[in-house]
Length: 321
Image 1: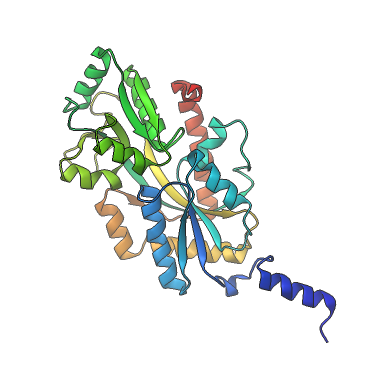
Image 2: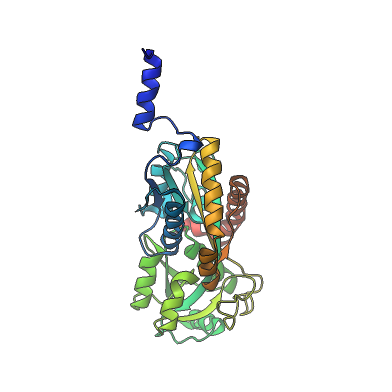
């Protein structure tokens, strides 16, 4: 007869309270929480990775969009989830900078998450609605300086990559712009396409289709060098803001306390998916750079981004918004 403690352990495993060993992982469907609304870059990349994990393990991967507070809503859900590898979160830059912007978070970014892998980095694109009479960065800056009413720009929320990139641009150019934050970058982009806002710096993944259709006019990319996907598009640095650079990035994290075997298996498969031929080609074609690094490397990257943007936030004053 089984002892009482063996029966208790068995019940805990069946209930999903105790973490499973790597050999048993995944034991059921996996949920990837996305901190933004469907259709944006974070959502697109999370679904690409999810499909690869499904193919590799035969377990369904469900993307769960939980927008709000630049990722804090999703972060709280993830931090409090059972650390068994069946609840993950696909993060963007807000994950690294929310501690700088919000005095009190419902979790500790450094202690409550286990970095899995940095999946990709992407250039952002400064783009305007066709009704904006500017065909270059120089013309846009001149318009902003001469106009009595500031130009409106959309972002995926306070502290998002779009917000910080534009705040840095306006700071370096010496212009005043009116920030219109949304719950996700795709909502802001939709309003830009509709002409409700004038401009936006956002992911190349979401801009290309609208630019090709003539619904938006791209002016520059935010990386330090031109990109192969858009070789004729100048960088903001070339356009007069010397030294300007800002990128978007996306990666996977899990709740802290993930068993080492599960973390290794999850990280290894995520890296494999990132560098698979079809996904790599799809990312490169859109101007993105596949990464796929180790948990330790991703943790160091997150720390470096926090340090980098602490300086940007101090210089631009975005905390005042």
